[in-house]
Length: 124
Image (cartoon, rainbow, N blue to C red):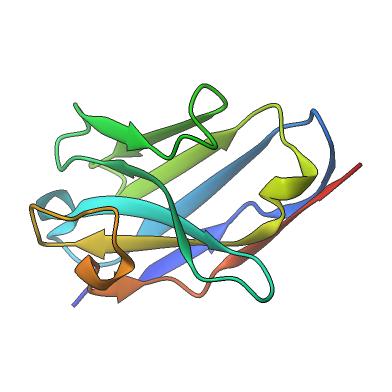
């Protein structure tokens, strides 16, 4: 069992930055691939980024590539999402998630544990 708690969301102007954090409970954090997803009103939850168990490999959605960076600190059981050059279309509730799987990691169904989400609002 893994419990995830996100923080760091808020209101920011376009072009600004935010850093989201996701703190995990349990002693098996390093055994999970960690992902970030987002969901805007009236839309499906979409993949944003993921990071491998060791932190050595990352993957991003095309819409955030070059602007967002995902990192993790296994000693602190925490994963981060640094978001730069934010755009109004980045406005959404952001969720972190943990997956024990090794394939189709862009799909929300591959993740077993989810945080409660944190709101990010980017004003124009």
